[in-house]
Length: 316
Image (cartoon, rainbow, N blue to C red; front, side, top):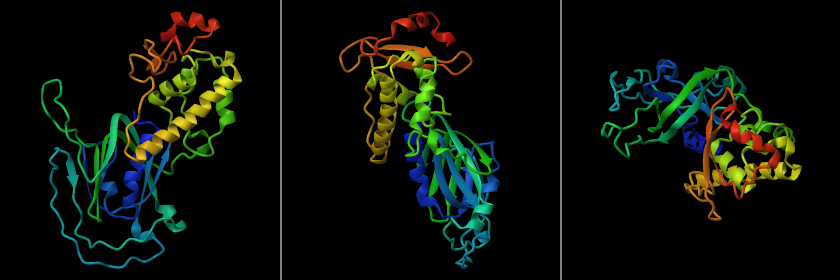
């Protein structure tokens, strides 16, 4: 699923629509009522970890009184070309929108939370197209979960995501790997616990925004074996792992914003940068999600006292 840097890139696509009014909504989602978005103003966009939050509110409740503009054309209810249900704009006149951010507007905001699946994404003013045929050989374009059209003439499209309304986004910058307030001391205490560091790194209550790609890459960069118990690793190794996590995610975000592709060091590789054979295994907690892990057993040595874990990787 998209990790912190990718979700922040998605946020940058939504930001230009802040202050605009929703005029039409479509999509296949059944998780929310599409009607709830009609004639709402997009007032804010935030990212916390791997979650995107969009704030919608009633523009007529803003302190600045809106001025009337010419009536816009109405459209009949119908279907999108992707076969999604569609709600069209009402015949009410559109109004000039004031900028969000006032205390009165904050009281009427509702936040729509998005959590993206493995191939989840956002597109602005374009639809995703099939790049290859499916298992049946059909070239079928992905079906949007949600399409939101705005009075500025553009639209946002959301694919493969879960969404739900909430009163406010959960904000804890001390655990977000991309926030300047990220708590390195708290992260160090968590990594020092007697459990494999690869599992701790995926704990969103400590390393919010870190996903499987970041986990694999920073473990290799720090030369730490994924099954190493944090309690037996030297503090300098754990500190280096945290520093790599912060630097790698920041660099990835910078590349994302420049539309540059990420160059992997170990993820999806058959050989490491030193020419050693890479091992791919599924590792995860006992009652949690197991993730594919790539590592180099030559560059990332497993401490001797962790050798017994080799027989119980699936039960960690």
